[in-house]
Length: 91
Image (cartoon, rainbow, N blue to C red):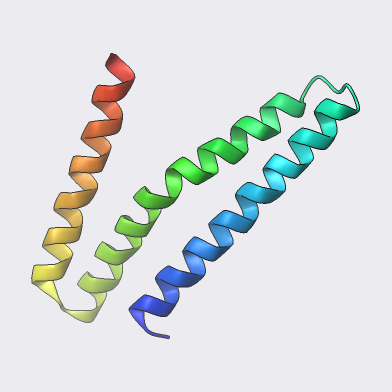
Protein backbone atom coordinates (compact mmCIF):
# COMPACT_ATOMS: atom_id res chain seq x y z
CA UNK A 1 0.00 0.00 0.00
CA UNK A 2 1.40 3.41 -0.95
CA UNK A 3 1.96 6.30 1.43
CA UNK A 4 -0.90 8.20 -0.18
CA UNK A 5 -3.26 5.24 0.16
CA UNK A 6 -2.45 4.80 3.84
CA UNK A 7 -2.94 8.48 4.56
CA UNK A 8 -6.19 8.46 2.60
CA UNK A 9 -7.43 5.48 4.59
CA UNK A 10 -6.56 7.25 7.86
CA UNK A 11 -8.44 10.40 6.86
CA UNK A 12 -11.53 8.53 5.64
CA UNK A 13 -11.62 6.34 8.73
CA UNK A 14 -11.19 9.35 11.00
CA UNK A 15 -14.09 11.21 9.39
CA UNK A 16 -16.34 8.14 9.67
CA UNK A 17 -15.42 7.67 13.34
CA UNK A 18 -16.05 11.35 14.07
CA UNK A 19 -19.38 11.13 12.26
CA UNK A 20 -20.39 8.14 14.37
CA UNK A 21 -19.51 10.04 17.55
CA UNK A 22 -21.63 12.97 16.36
CA UNK A 23 -24.53 10.69 15.47
CA UNK A 24 -24.48 8.93 18.85
CA UNK A 25 -24.19 12.30 20.60
CA UNK A 26 -27.09 13.85 18.73
CA UNK A 27 -29.32 10.84 19.27
CA UNK A 28 -28.36 10.83 22.94
CA UNK A 29 -29.19 14.51 23.30
CA UNK A 30 -32.54 14.06 21.56
CA UNK A 31 -33.35 11.19 23.92
CA UNK A 32 -32.36 13.35 26.90
CA UNK A 33 -29.32 11.34 27.95
CA UNK A 34 -26.75 13.15 29.99
CA UNK A 35 -23.76 11.90 27.97
CA UNK A 36 -24.94 13.00 24.53
CA UNK A 37 -22.74 16.09 24.67
CA UNK A 38 -19.74 13.98 25.58
CA UNK A 39 -20.03 11.96 22.37
CA UNK A 40 -20.44 15.14 20.31
CA UNK A 41 -17.29 16.48 21.97
CA UNK A 42 -15.46 13.29 21.06
CA UNK A 43 -16.53 13.86 17.46
CA UNK A 44 -15.02 17.34 17.50
CA UNK A 45 -11.83 16.03 19.14
CA UNK A 46 -11.60 13.31 16.50
CA UNK A 47 -11.85 15.84 13.70
CA UNK A 48 -9.29 18.13 15.32
CA UNK A 49 -6.81 15.29 15.78
CA UNK A 50 -6.90 14.21 12.12
CA UNK A 51 -4.35 16.78 10.84
CA UNK A 52 -1.94 15.80 13.61
CA UNK A 53 -2.36 12.10 12.90
CA UNK A 54 -1.93 12.68 9.17
CA UNK A 55 1.38 14.50 9.63
CA UNK A 56 2.57 11.95 12.21
CA UNK A 57 1.74 9.06 9.87
CA UNK A 58 3.50 10.85 7.01
CA UNK A 59 6.66 11.27 9.08
CA UNK A 60 6.66 7.64 10.20
CA UNK A 61 6.06 6.31 6.69
CA UNK A 62 8.72 8.57 5.17
CA UNK A 63 11.26 7.48 7.79
CA UNK A 64 10.32 3.86 7.10
CA UNK A 65 10.88 4.31 3.38
CA UNK A 66 14.20 6.04 3.89
CA UNK A 67 13.02 9.41 2.58
CA UNK A 68 14.86 11.38 5.21
CA UNK A 69 14.23 14.89 3.86
CA UNK A 70 10.47 14.43 3.67
CA UNK A 71 10.43 12.81 7.10
CA UNK A 72 12.28 15.79 8.59
CA UNK A 73 9.87 18.24 6.97
CA UNK A 74 6.89 16.23 8.24
CA UNK A 75 8.36 16.15 11.73
CA UNK A 76 8.91 19.92 11.64
CA UNK A 77 5.30 20.48 10.54
CA UNK A 78 4.13 18.20 13.37
CA UNK A 79 6.12 20.21 15.92
CA UNK A 80 4.68 23.47 14.58
CA UNK A 81 1.12 22.06 14.74
CA UNK A 82 1.62 20.84 18.30
CA UNK A 83 3.09 24.18 19.32
CA UNK A 84 0.19 26.08 17.75
CA UNK A 85 -2.33 23.91 19.63
CA UNK A 86 -0.35 24.44 22.83
CA UNK A 87 -0.17 28.19 22.42
CA UNK A 88 -3.84 28.29 21.52
CA UNK A 89 -4.70 26.44 24.72
CA UNK A 90 -2.74 28.98 26.78
CA UNK A 91 -4.69 31.98 25.49
